[in-house]
Image (cartoon, rainbow, N blue to C red):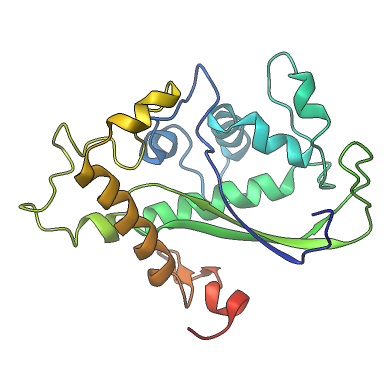
Length: 217
């Protein structure tokens, strides 16, 4: 942000907000608890508050939301976007929920985020950025294409892909080669599948695609 980059793409570990969520919490679990896709839903506020309890406060602090519990002081210095009513986080929840319903990968862009002064990081306000966020989940449109003799996602080996356990740094060294390969296949598929954009079940374009950011392949 401090370099003045207009388009930023981030793959983030959103699901780290104990006790509600950890590395192995799936987006399916989060969606079941907070399935709202429209602000017209009479339970929108309830669902949004529930959704936030699952989301990593080290991410939400960028927008000025520091969680419902005691504030981690290290997060305060990371506030860089002007979002007084956290409307952009509401937008992200609705887009992710709609994409999940459609079996699509969770990729969404928050456009024209207003940058504020952050003296700690040397960020000067007054500009806007477009932030594209990728959440590694297991989209139905991906899992349905994998032959069962190649990978069974209810098996012990694959049931937590891509939310593999990483409670300590050595856990990553215990992943099997098929697990690592599947993570790579999923990441490649997410980008390729969404290159020209993603739509929700109602046909609304929820992500305009990487082609708009990078141009043609």
